[in-house]
Length: 223
Image (cartoon, rainbow, N blue to C red):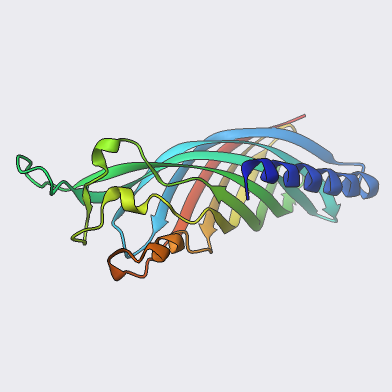
């Protein structure tokens, strides 16, 4: 799914649900912008990784749905990093010391969460599915392309960039604050094998499996 298609689907989906919310619960329906920081990692036994940080921004709508439940829906964008352990075996002058090789990954998300209001307009817990569409696991510096990754003899840093693009996440979190301004802490776990596309290349005959792990800490401003 391209980013253009993702944006179109999000707009149509958001307008449809907002129409439903306004039709049935006119007392509360808010549109907001959100931004913050994230922490990203890939949980896998096939690579040695180190979590990295990045930024998050997006648009969100919160609408009353039923009794003490709201619906949260919108689109968000993540730019974050992750390190993978490797070493340079091609340079005879090097000490072959291990180091974490930095990758950058960017993604867009469609979010649909159910929110249970503990204190209406002030404190709630949320959970639900997220559709995540990401780009490549791109090396921050081409100088690391031929570094050999930890645990392998021929697997190079550039060989693992083409990861699975479409992933499904399960999210849970908490939001607190005022009616027009809130802060949020959310955890997302990728149920899809984000390294599955590497298996098509049959790299070192390894059956790769990895799941994304993402923390997002953000502030939300409602109009």
